[in-house]
Image (spheres, rainbow, N blue to C red):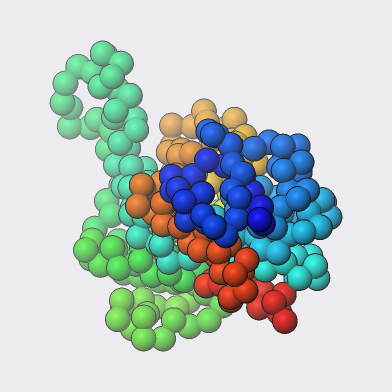
Amino acid sequence: MPVAVCSAALPFDVAAALRGVAEVRAPAAGRMSRAELLAAVRDADALISLLVDRVDEELLAAAPRLRVVANCAVGYDNVDVAAATARGVAVTHTPDVLTDATADFTWALLLAVARRVVEGDALVRSGTWAGWEPGQLLGAPIAGRTLGIVGFGRIGRAVARRARGFDMAILYASPRPAGADAAALAARRVSLDELLAEADVVSLHCPLTDATRHLIDRRALAAMKSTALLVNTARGACVDEAALVDALEAGDIAGAALDVFEREPDVHPGLVASPKVVLAPHAGSATTAARAEMARLCAGAVRDVLSGRRPAHLLNPEALR
């Protein structure tokens, strides 16, 4: 029977979903180390990977029987798709199912940094709170302000839909116009430079590519309003963390809320120390429903490929020719 390796314990019964199709090998809890994963894929026909797993030439060479990589994420910058295609390995991902979860969490972070929720929580828990004062923990207004969305795909548009409830003006920067979707949201497409200059909140929803790595660098941060907030639920390396720390310390921008980091799980110490930053542990899709559905999609992709069918959300159809 074919072997399907799952690099982590998932909130879905993958073994039951693949019963009769593949023998599933997965840790009982947590996730495999790099060494454990390289050893596990030696006789694997399928791999369900996480965004923290590097599916690169080294791993692919260690897995000569591999036919499919089902990446349990919407992004796939952790997978060398070209190398997989050259070896005839199908690669899939899990779009759509985490859109609402991530958009909701973007707004949780946005409001937390704007209204200084984490600082307030710490103050109350400290036992030193002396009661209400008119100048205490004053935050930034959001209603009626301008939201700039960098990357106007599924998640970016979902964030924009939620912004309508706050009567926000919506700008977006994207390689392609969003057409009817943008019109329905009254969203205006602008250049990145114009977005940075006008937005009160800049929210990142772009994939990580060569073009977007350190998209938010020193120049971009200097172009933002001194009262602006930066929110990132996309990929950590879209932001130059050292430049962000300097911008926050200099008062070039007012605050940031980050769910993703350049070198996870390591976080720049300047971000950890800053009271102007809200930090989250890559939890954008962390609802029980979203994570379970992501795992279900991965199991379905493995089932399809091992059964000779074309899977949903296939990134490299040429691999199956």
